[in-house]
Image (tube, rainbow, N blue to C red; front, side, top):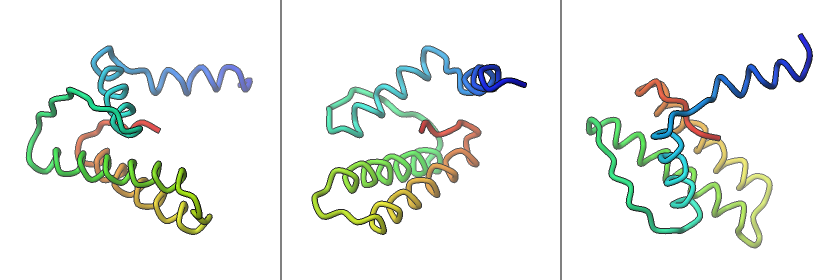
Length: 98
């Protein structure tokens, strides 16, 4: 299979509904410090996993932008982000964006 065809298949795997796109855009806005009007509904555990993944993602972004950040500190925050994202996905079945 050609590289171009693999890329197309990979993109379709991550296709989002309109609601999913709005959700991802809202999360992206929050991650860069903008206010959002997202309303989240779910079980207590789902909301807690979402919150943990959001906070870890935000800490990772903040660490990337921090003066004096080291490769080790960025990798540590990335590891936390990936772990919380994985927990969210395992619980909900919804893949964590990026």
